[in-house]
Image (cartoon, rainbow, N blue to C red):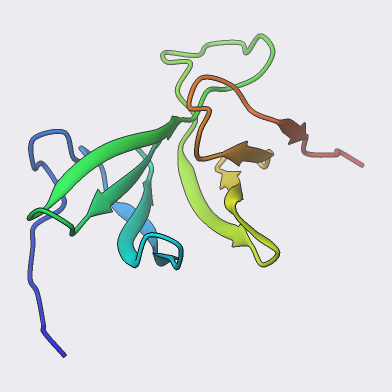
Length: 119
């Protein structure tokens, strides 16, 4: 087993805020694996190990609706997980309490959103 130490924070194309969750994503049909991370910078990134360390954006999390006093429309990501039955779909949890269902093939919009319920 190889042990790798990379600084994923502030790497070109990498995160600019702390990383809150990491998961290995195994693609059995491609015999390929990658590391997926989520950060309070609002990005869900996929780190490919196939040809060195390459990064791509799976999703940039956005806040929904209209917020009072928002400085940014970017939502801070805290956690995520892939669906056990379909590794192309994943859910993300944000600081605002929203949960978003997304697909690795569509980085511009959510498949579904579950909003924080007050009360």
